[in-house]
Length: 149
Image (cartoon, rainbow, N blue to C red; front, side):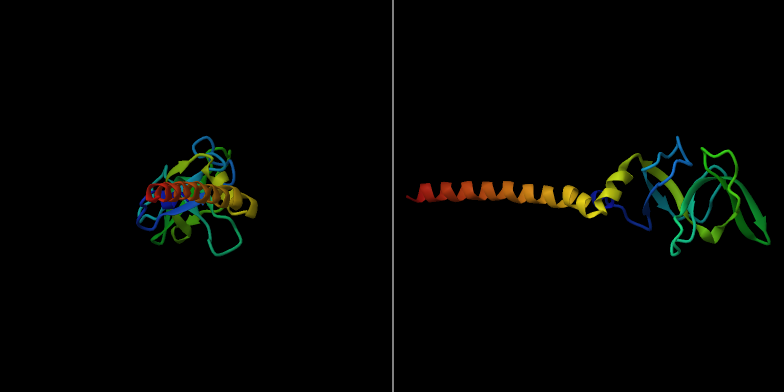
């Protein structure tokens, strides 16, 4: 829904943040706008993981960078976590850098994926719009009939 409102071009992704590991910077339920980059620095918030597996990608901050035989590995940590992540993140596992987040917008997105939420957010407003426009058309038809007689 958000992507359709704004003219977003390029390879941006929208992801719903499902845990509080990055609070207060990124709140649980936020929508994070992510864009791949060729260059990641210490302090960047990145999303990483295998998108095609059943695991949910993780969004954490880079706290250090290692270069081993020319390959980059990122040491990451959630802002709300006490310890660094147990596994270093190879550059090829990075989905992208978080550009910004929209607090709590993810709850709306998650609900819209369910049948009841879809009905509330899409079908009901659609029915209201069609009903309202139908009333306007009917009034115009009545006016036209009165002016013709």
